[in-house]
Length: 102
Image (cartoon, rainbow, N blue to C red; front, side, top):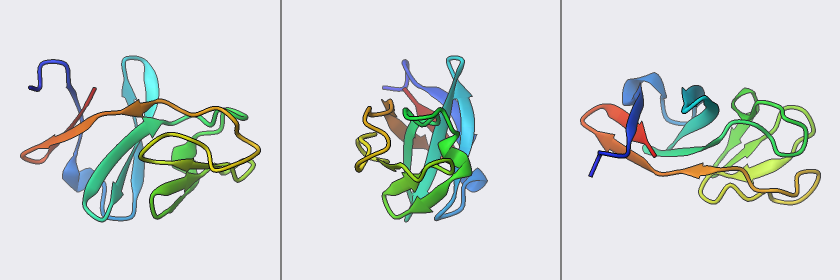
C-alpha cells in the first residue's frame, strides 16, 4: 500500500494544532496536525503565492498570511475571495511515527 507514498516527516515533528512545510516531488507541501489527524495540501496560496505554512491554522482551515485567503485542509478549496482556485490535496498515511504522502 505504501509503494506510491514518500516519507516526508515524523509525527513528533508536528504537535497538535501546528503545521510545517516539506518538499515533495519538488513542490512545497503543508502538513498540518488537526487533533491528531495529519492533512496535507499544496503550501502555496493560489491567489498570490504566499506560503500557507507561514499563515494561521484555524481548525480544518489554514489562512494565508498575505491576504487572509482561507483554504480547507481536507479539500484544498478556498473559502471565498481573494483566492478562487483550489490547491493540491495529498493523501496522507501514518506508518509507525512516519508521515507519508502521495
